[in-house]
Length: 180
Image (tube, rainbow, N blue to C red; front, top):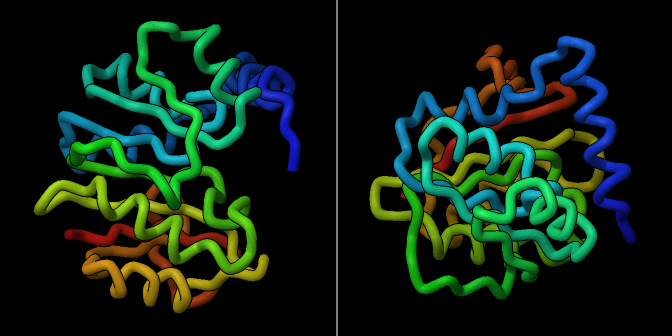
């Protein structure tokens, strides 16, 4: 899939301009009190930029050149990398690795285990992998949980929204926290 980073960002800019809060993911991450965050599949960097504004050290990674270019135009002072998350090796860990915005659904079918593994390599001991994605689109919670277990991450908490609405066991969206 090819993206237009500027066009993608315009959607969020319009929502924010209309008064809609577009920082639910950052609000959620801040409850975990991180000092460092890897925004995995960062897109145009909306989450990373907000976390940076709140004093968290962030690195944003996305496979799409257009998305990273849009992020760099807005915040050239943040570390933005174009990379495949499944192959990612930054040589360091983070308090939180977040995959917001359906990242596992944009990964080619059959590569989700590598995606989770690439993210897990960057979770500090005691840290968290946080992931939110829509259900019913070819990748489900049980497959995600199994991919996390395979790389040593255990489910810590699960909700149906970034606002921490209880997850009833099924629904249209899931936010999971797995810990190292």
